[in-house]
Image (tube, rainbow, N blue to C red):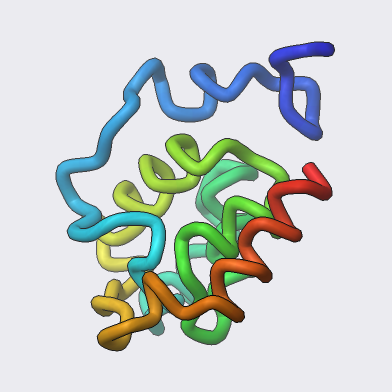
Length: 115
């Protein structure tokens, strides 16, 4: 298997070698959603950041974005953190109990199995 992602780019290149985001509070269950600024800037973002913004038109967890984008969770956390830091995404803590909600966990596992 190849370490390159869906678009033939190695994940660490998408994050500039970064493995963590100082801007994204919380874990994989953190919800993000595009802001008005993000909608305005989407055409000026690099391709992966723009793709993430398009997938976050409605509140979505970082884990769900990872599955939708077919990118490692850590990469999506860093990319989402970049967008939160510049105001293109807003973040919200997941509702209490969602991190252990069996249906959510099943959906996340199913999505990751498809990767």
